[in-house]
Image 1: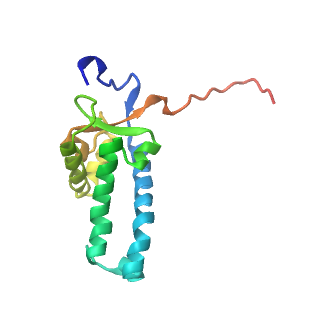
Image 2: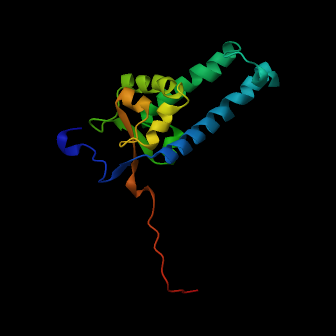
Image 3: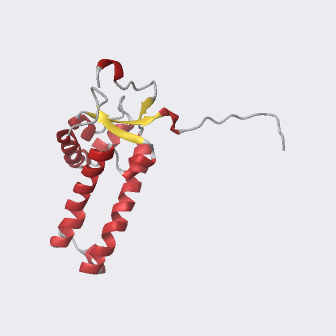
Length: 163
């Protein structure tokens, strides 16, 4: 984007807050679980959930590690958002320009989730009190998550009762 077309948070957009992003993550997690768990149970049986192994085999690696990586990166590259973020009308943009992030930024952001979750999820919780609502993964990748201000309708209350 050139200088005149740079997105301005506060005009039409706002930073996506902690709870809306939690909601988006829940939606994404449910979708991934619905797609992968039936196959994992078919291959490994219900004992899959009792195992302490990080990876139980090739199918587990593909469905639990590789598929989410490819799916999330694909949604980010083509839509700037996962289905959960689309549901809350949010998207990922470059923190400096408001443009679509590069593939490199998306990769750093994805791997940044590991860094953000290791210290008891502190890097994820950081979104709640950061001025730009950035988690550590956003800071590492130089991205922000923005949402359309027009996504919610204003509610007006009246003391007149027409019913």
